[in-house]
Length: 312
Ligand SMILES: NCc1[nH]cc(CCC(=O)O)c1CC(=O)O
Figure (tube, rainbow, N blue to C red):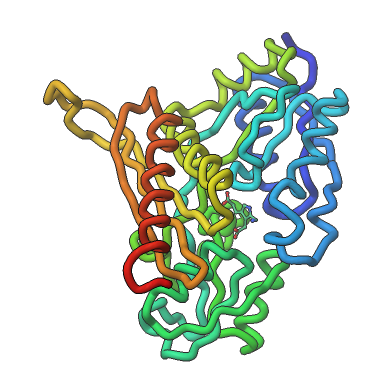
């Protein structure tokens, strides 16, 4: 098979970097590619993402793919809605970037060095809840815009710091602006942060196999499946901010033998920024099940907290 693969991409610097990387992998494996620009309403809007919905960045690309205008769609996996589009197949989850959130602060400061009252910008309710729960006395302010717009607010002195996905900065070659990569204990990343999702049409099995064999990474796919299952069940049960992170680790299986297992952590915030946490370990082959079980644990713990002694 040597037809040119048409790769649909958004025009932002991050999207172009991601699509170019995928194209390079495919070209290196002997498959000719062509990048096709697709505009999405999410790139035009300046409203908070929490209001316009997470699908804004991905739906136009998915429509172009379903309509056979392109053969491959590349998304940031964390921007993808949790329900699979029945017309499309998630053909590959490539090796994931470092999933941590990153602090970009004035004067090279780390999170712990920011004095109480410092103003930290983020448009993400998940990051906001974890920042307010940190006990550092930080003031959180909502922001949006591309990486440069957000960072300019720090250099201009309007904000003391912003929190961004480390992976986004890595992909556009801007790791040097980071003043601290935040430990997941302090800031659990969004489900699937740092991972790409590569989709094709469900009936295009040749492309599906090709994408899978060249690009798919089993450990990244399992981790993302577990994290997105946490999100899917929590979306159904409440609308609170969610963080989740799964990692493939060496552990003992049920028979006491060393095996690669999936270690999963989750956090959900209450309306007044109390954080409820849970963790679990399971088979990499049952990633989704592990995520669903962890979500149930989080929902129960959250319900117990909200109805517990002290509340009326
Ligand atoms: N919500 C926008 C978005 N979608 C994916 C990334 C970064 C790359 C990634 O997480 O894969 C970002 C920017 C950010 O959160 O700072």
